Length: 408
Image 1 (cartoon, rainbow, N blue to C red):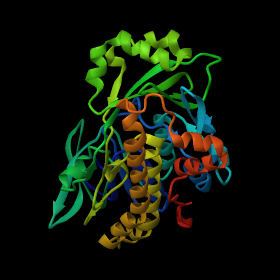
Image 2: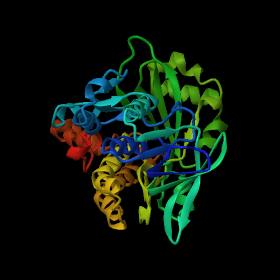
Image 3: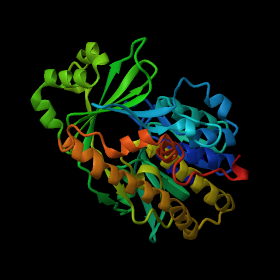
């Protein structure tokens, strides 16, 4: 059943070992469902992936009995999200106002989080993770997806499955091959990611800096600052045209305590451009196929909620599908239930992201808000109790999921 040569079979085949794919694989394995997750890389070591673990995910770890082991991973706890303008500091979200036990969000390398999920899933004999296995397309028979094709070091293979799940990201090969096309929403900004070293005595936390039509976000990590500089859509070439010296001076002006480290951006190869995109599939499924996470809905990096949405998708899918998969009775109706469950929080979150981008961030990076602190920041400073709203939206989400008893 688990052979990789030629054609093999399983109950659920999952393309992509990201947060959605590995969480779903682990939960299905807990429920006794034979599951294979395929990952095209040999490891999880990729820079500038989302590293936010939200309060709702921390609670999920507790509900699954994994909290103690999870908290042993090296991480930072962030209790407030601040924005600094030329008028001074403002608190956008105060996670200390969250309900429940976890009154913070956590940052840890995504590769550590994924390795943790993979290790926990591997404790179950009905789980397999195929590394270096690139999914190349779907197997379709009589209008139904009956598995996937993948390529590894030994050649081309087919994996037949009762259910195939596309959790292989915004450029999902499965989604494309199955003919599912997302609705793309416009975005007027891109993000340039880079790292700067951290020194003892640096102010910590997660801080956005708004000044003179520029936006910089710095996120504290164990050994460095993960840093994002926002530009207008397609504006990377414009930044490069100004030259590295201009870019370094701009960084030093925005965050003076990092001025002695801006030389660590040695060449433009040290800067990675992220094409900010928001999209969503009108229909997340076809007979035999379900899309989750970025394969179903690409989120803006605003609020850092992409991982949380993906994990909540996986929990909802496991709750609905584990029983039918175990009994061999999964139908299109079950797949439609997953989409109905997860569409409202996805739509509402994307609408909020689009509103924040179009009303605040995009005008700012176009230079239309050069010396004005956004009114919403002034209101939140005047009425701190309102800081609980953004904290809940970011830290918990609009529809947090809980694992069914049979998955715990």
